[in-house]
Length: 485
Image (cartoon, rainbow, N blue to C red; front, side, top):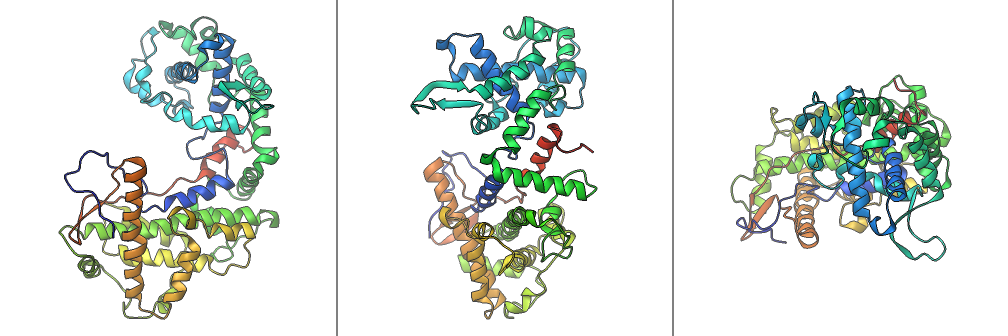
């Protein structure tokens, strides 16, 4: 078994991210079925704004000045004054501007003139950089000559990118800020920013041509087939349900043939509905194992061998079923509606609630995932393939978990739990932490191993992964595809 770093090794920064190496699978599937729009790109405004930033900087600077760093500095400064203008005007969309809260906390909004403070973002572009990939995917920018495929020294605008940028420029060029202050960054009058905030809105109000270009690039091209399917699924949900936003319950329980709800839907949506059900199922699988991991760490407050550790976990747990019973005897009871699942998870996450049920509830949740997906006859080849994701990146696939359950049906529940604790949690954590140390030079070890005994280094916090459909909802509303409720 691999060894963690010594307790006195403080040369590496500790990372809490994905300590079991399981979260990447749901992310990979989400990336395929909802490309371009992700959990950190909720506003299409930033694709138009960033494209304009490249265009405007290039138009006003010589070739030797067109480095990516210089463009990013320019975009960062323009974003500062847009966010500041929104703060001053107290616009409803203020929070949608990246860095707006930092500016509000640092700047006296009642002064008459304002200077640029580049420290409002911790890094060059912070979250703005998350929109960059979309600029290339939607072909607003290119890094290479389309004929020779030679790499450019700096990103070049495409004709489509210029069209988008010019549509943005047509609106912002009407402002006094654009005409006199956008390259200065100092002593910008309050009334100039008030005007800027009234003209520019991060929901793209007034940018009809830009919205049309973005709608076409996102939802009307062959390259975004699966994004179009997610878009169609969302439109169906909002046409069918009186809701403000999409939830895990909707994506996991509303339309599944194995849920207690089983709502009807158009047959052409079956593939994308199943895909999103698998994404949420992966998240529940990860959360269930995380619940067990959390309790295991809480029980490891003194040095223990692996067997001693596991026995203490059982001793400290409140378990209602007979550990010596066959696993098959537990399976039928592991089917839950949304509120039942979420209550178990909420208790595990709470700092106030007792966690003595974590092992039982974690096992119940992962077994409910087995019951939901094993031997499904409504899955397409593509859906079924998602159940294999995790095999190639040192994670755990759902299919391998299903085979494990099948192989343990006639064995005891205790043996099954011990296997999960040893292989799906302990070994998985050690392998994941070792990878982080080798490839990222980061310390991801929550435990320390010394002479075949373990001691806790860190506590584990349960967090749900983001769901891209939430951000896609925001994007579609901004582009007038969904009515904002």
